[in-house]
Length: 232
Image (cartoon, rainbow, N blue to C red):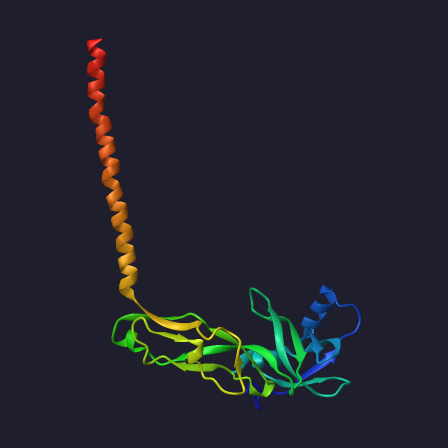
């Protein structure tokens, strides 16, 4: 489940007045960040929250899929999730977040990280390279059934072997929205890259003699041209 008992409730204070850049800057100077709360058929509310609590949630095992208690001053406590956030590009400080109220009895769609477990046989004993192709997969389930991540064991994967969405842990509580045949990871051989490079080099080398031969032919034709001119 995405909810974590160690995550504290997020306390939010409604904002008043104009919601422009200057107002947002004043909020950040005060040590808070601006946010918007919406969802569950209720009106959107502009609030301020503590960035330290939000950062703790984003850095937790379940990340942005974490379900937590949201306490907006003057209203009842509800379940919520972080659905969007913005960072300052240089220092990485949080600038703004969007929070969505969650109805615990309704299905929802989320993207869940995929974690590869183990070292493939094709890498360890056969000199291959493991490529992690699909790092997140979209699923549909109840909020209480959202996994923090999906683990897939790749230890038995040999050269040219692949793991697909169909190989991910399935259960009756989760519906995968991605194509079951979609590749999650595969082990490729280094030799394939070497052969491609050698083929490219050979093609270049094969073209060079033709250019040289053409140039030599032009040079050899020049004396004949001079001889014809002299005869005239």
